[in-house]
Length: 92
Image (cartoon, rainbow, N blue to C red):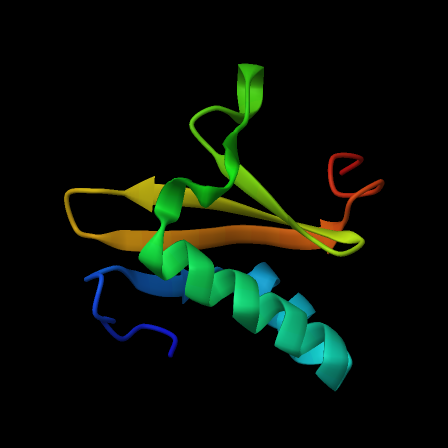
């Protein structure tokens, strides 16, 4: 699924840190993330735009986690920038 085009013509890439977080997650959490990734590939604006210094990032929640991403409409690409617990993701 990652890096390949789907029927909606959006591909999905994970940043190094997002991929690391994804790979370390338990299988049931990975399934949760995969469902959100599928939704984002079909409907990139399914999440909500972040404001202030975090613009132009978008975010979508997945259980107790938040996925932050960029939408590149020109290249039909979703770039996942960061994944983390909802309460901790902005502390760094």
